[in-house]
Length: 171
Image (cartoon, rainbow, N blue to C red):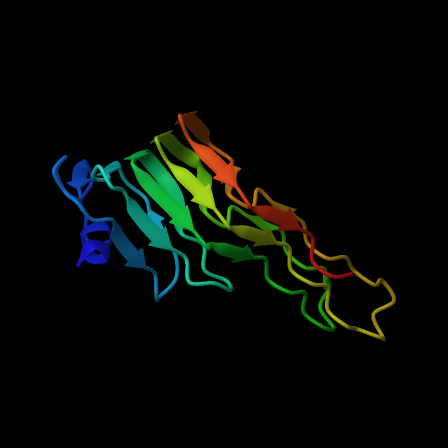
């Protein structure tokens, strides 16, 4: 399947979904969490493009941990990153920060996006724990970059990010 091509790629691979004569849009639906990339990889979509769906709650699309990652002709849709909720009776019961519902670019990653669209992605901070006996109420975590949270190196050319949002967790 198209998803297996990405999951089973080796460092330095180029995945070209089809040639310029391809007449249909490839659709990849994530079912078991994000696509973690920790090596050099290039993904090239066909003329009609590739859409990768995040399938909703707590399912970021790409987590680029390290390496050089290039992608063109791809639409990322519906990714959702959410920070962990605080733990009751814990030393720090605040919610965790999170971001990049579509793409999280890690500190060791170099990412180049061309002719890509990121749409309808969400990043949400985790909620603080309810802890009536803790004294310190804790805080909700922060949400960063609904579409993309860049902690590394990111270059975008002819790309669009829209209808993405980021918000904090409940206090």
